Image (tube, rainbow, N blue to C red; front, side):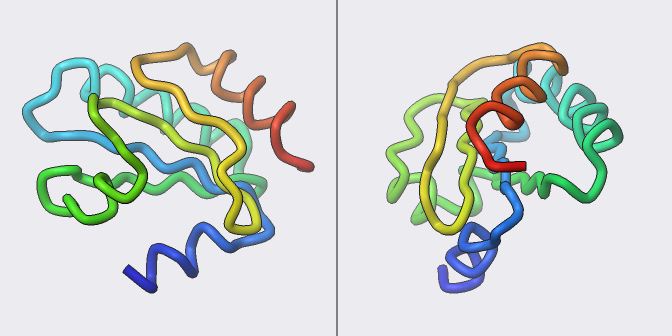
Length: 100
């Protein structure tokens, strides 16, 4: 768990994608998040967390449905959303909620 805490305590915004391999919408979201990363480059970290393999973390953040995205910066949760968003919407949220 401490590795996860180190990741979310970054000054750079970190978008966590809680997903499951059996989840259809999660598979839809994956290429969208790749486009977000391609657009934003080093300004954002995007980490994928498989809820089936990381139940402790999913439980800690009360992830009930997948996909759920949570945006962290300096260890603080800035935003969370379940479901699939467009690339533009994800970038807008990251830009508005973080100081990047």
